[in-house]
Image (spheres, rainbow, N blue to C red):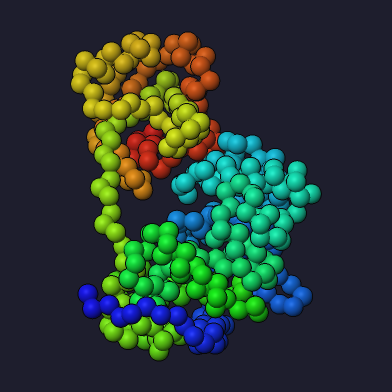
Length: 367
């Protein structure tokens, strides 16, 4: 790759003026955005909730969740007091459930340490559970007008192309270098609009996959990658590690009109969530029979439910499902806190089941 030499953008108005002019006419109409003015700024709570939901999640997927979440928990106090199962149910299907737990934990922090008000100080925002540099910068700039940068994947990609940065984008040193450059050009006026403009530019024009739409970009004339026709060469990424494969046996256990759920451990993948009972590995007929005895499941019928797959960021579950039908189940099993029998109605309304099990959950309502 004939890579041009990276350099800095020397004139701040080369970036700020064209970008903010573009944003004034091209900004996305999103439910959590309220135009800032001298007398009014977006609600910090709304900004915080939306930014957490948008982490690793598409905008279109977030819209409905955002509206339902604010209806259930309209303010910090209601979120701090939220029952855990209700919170998880509202988050069901959005993924990365630790985000919801951290929201509640941070809400408790805000009630206890900041008198129920989200702090406007950047360092205090960073002290809140689940808030890192990007989210703190987004809240500070958008909700409070404080000139703090919010460098996410969009900003890293855009600036790597503008500067023709040939270092691997996931390296800490490269992220730090680009972050410093973003901070250097961040305007004192309208920092929130600048950060949101970067988000929109990365979403609609300087896109991550495929050819960017450079002809519509306000920075087309100063982008070094575009100048040399190397837009898709940036950002430079290291080769992805191969995803770990895990085999699973998943059980849809039906007892009369109830479904048996199991609660996952409080640490690890999908921590603390209710799930369809499952075991590691591919089980033989003999091993299936032995497992039923361990769970004290006696008279039952078994039906194969086929194969399923779910991909997490670092691991892939390859599953084989089984429907287990019986009239009753050992009370000893249900005496354990991590096991519960629920009606189909309660499962639909109260208990959050990770989308990893969606292909088998659908079987609950078969026929």
